[in-house]
Image (cartoon, rainbow, N blue to C red; front, side, top):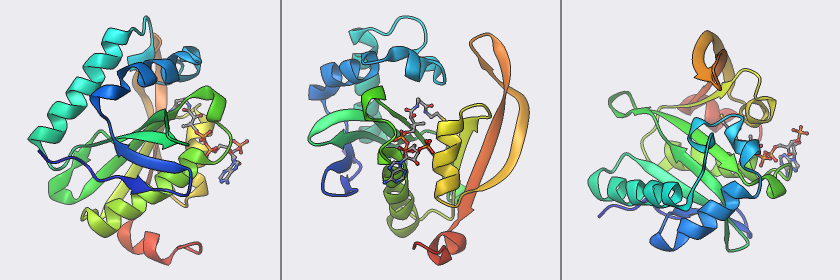
Length: 188
Ligand SMILES: CC(C)(COP(=O)(O)OP(=O)(O)OC[C@H]1O[C@@H](n2cnc3c(N)ncnc32)[C@H](O)[C@@H]1OP(=O)(O)O)[C@@H](O)C(=O)NCCC(=O)NCCS
């Protein structure tokens, strides 16, 4: 079984593999304000149930056991599940990885996802062989785009009408940074 490592972000934030004990905490973190997440993430739209949380955790554990390239982390803040961060789509043969994230509403606006994304990007470049790291956000998702922009990811393009979100075709903004750019950025 190959589990992702735990990545310490700072004294209170940690990225760590999901465990079977996380089903209820995951459900609670989503349900603290489901609409906040469902507005942008299809998996939370419609009914979100404890069974869905259970299925997600089971899929993560199965993924850990079957591949070394899949990465799915709980964002833990002060010892409690606060959100999720993962690398859902990758082209491993090209050493290209894409980071995705969500955070329970009550903890937003404190830089938690910016700092977590910084740590995961560091990990991907330094320890996971990444050459290029991407972030994709619906064009109207300003909070998510701000995370990419704050970390120096470059806006490479806006894919017009490329995602169906809540019955509407929406644009997707694609950001990326390469290994050489990451290591020479001002706050490296
Ligand atoms: C998008 C999302 C993940 C952002 O998470 P977050 O932790 O609130 O993001 P951050 O706190 O890092 O950045 C947001 C704000 O915190 C502020 N902030 C506060 N302290 C900060 C610090 N120490 N470092 C960086 N930013 C800080 C930033 O200035 C920013 O404020 P602004 O948006 O008013 O400019 C979260 O809103 C979310 O889960 N949304 C719903 C799901 C979603 O859209 N996921 C992404 C799909 S692509």
